[in-house]
Amino acid sequence: MTFADVDVEATVKASASAFVGNLDDVEVSLVGGSPQTTLRFSDVRWSVGRGANSLELTYAGGSVGDRALVVPGMPSFEEGFRYFVMLNGSANAFVPITYAENGAWQSVTTRAGDEILVDARGRVLLRTASGRVFAREWFAPATAGADIASTAPDFLRPVSVADFCDWVAKTAGGPAVDRPGGAAASGTGPSQAGDR
Image 1: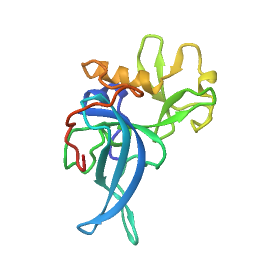
Image 2 (image 1 turned 180 degrees about the horizontal axis):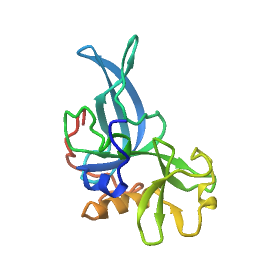
Image 3 (image 1 turned 45 degrees about the vertical axis):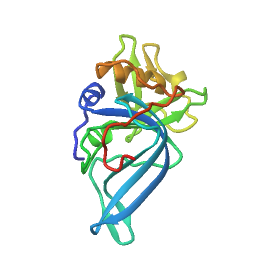
Image 4 (image 1 turned 60 degrees about the vertical axis):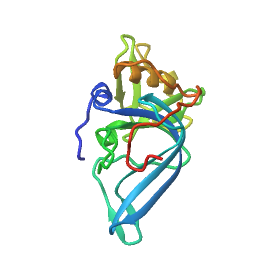
């Protein structure tokens, strides 16, 4: 793994922008003989920074035919899911996601209908009664349909996507600018590789 396990708050503070969006397409192509992956997001809502309601994010890595490039620590992405992603602000970054797998979470809907976030290692984002947010391995697998909230101790609760968006905005030093389900942000957004 390229990046050590980094605290969620430290990851937020190292990020230039952050958003939640639906991943519609994952495309791997050869550029200069090396594989690169392009993620196409729609219904993008910005928690830190402002941008368009769709986004293309391109980074090194992937597999095309007999060519493969593995970037240690990069999270994997699957079409058809929502993700919360923090970006480091480098337009031509080899790894544009802040601290690689520490900066991306997949949205999972529990049996109770709650939308929570799970990292690349299957850890659930939790919040303590004092407001601290952290990722923790859960006793039951954090998969679609899991009833995580009902197995949480009283002093810990899974963080909803909307609450995490607000917490990230506050932790980064600003107000929440575009909650999921709210109006799309307008104007130009943070410059990222492949941002359109």
